[in-house]
Structure formats: C-alpha cells, structure tokens
Image 1 (cartoon, helix red, strand yellow):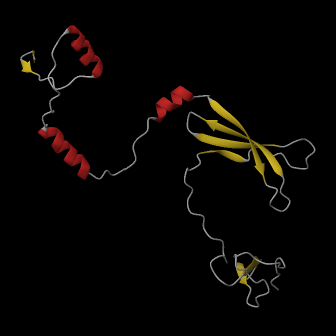
Image 2 (cartoon, one colour):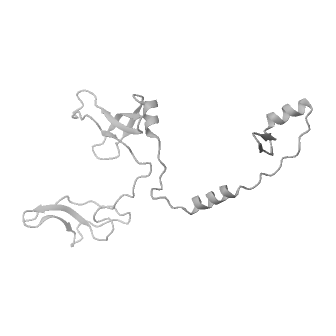
Image 3 (tube, helix red, strand yellow):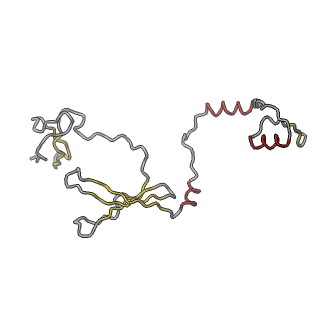
Length: 185
C-alpha cells in the first residue's frame, strides 16, 4: 500500500477486520512476521543497560488530587484489646483520603467511660504497606534480663541488668513472675 509516496506493508489484522473482509469475499494472506527495526532494538538495549538515578516511577499525583479531592472513605472499626491488662474493646473510625492515599483514625469514646477525649488516635499520614523490621527491645537478644530503666542525677538514664537472676527468662523468651522496678540509691 502506498500512501504519500511511502510504501507500507500490512502484516496482520484483528479478528473483526478479518471477519468483515471474509464476508465481503476478500481473500486474506496468512499473517506475516513484522520486520525487525534496528533502531527499536538499539533503544531496547540502551534502556536495558541504563540504571536510573531515581529508580521509582513518577506518579501523577495532581490528577489523583483533582479527581478525588474532598472524597473520603469512612470505615467503622473495632479493636479488641482485651488480651492486655486493663485492655477493653474500642470503637474506631478510619478515614481514608482518596486524594493523597492517607489515613487517620479517631476513637469513639462513649460518654462517662472514664477515658479522656483525645482528638485523634492516629494523625493523618501515609502508612507503609511493608513496615520496617521491628527493632528488638533491650534484653530480648541476651540470656540476661534487663530489670528496668532507671535515672539518676550522676549517671543519667541506664538499664539495670539482673546479675542475681531474680527474674529468670522462660524458654519462650518471656519473663516469669517478677517484681517491677528498682530504685538506685
């Protein structure tokens, strides 16, 4: 096919075009292979070897903001904290802001519950999908037990190790019954 003094070769067509031309009685050849484009091959090799300075793709956040501004998803949540000492079930409201993919959490505090009204349980922020590895607390990686953190005017803040093995650690890594705190004289 020649268009504007350039020669184009048709190699294949979609199924709708194939059915349409067959009904008109046009005989179609078998699909042909596309000839290799040396420039496209060269560009693919270059892009494969490039290491970008910033490996993350740029997201069009302006479009997302303009499309979803003032659109918020509201979820009613429930946190069962009864396993912890003095824990109780808590009702929460989670807001998911579509404009910038942030969340905030409010706690629903019933009247006369004895709890102080806190404006937000979690301030509006982005929450990572994969949280970083949680750091181990002092005393979790050793056989010795850390009793408590004490502060003194001379030494500042420090951890006191249980050298007398007053609070032995069980095989599961949890403390058995133990006294709490100590006073540095």
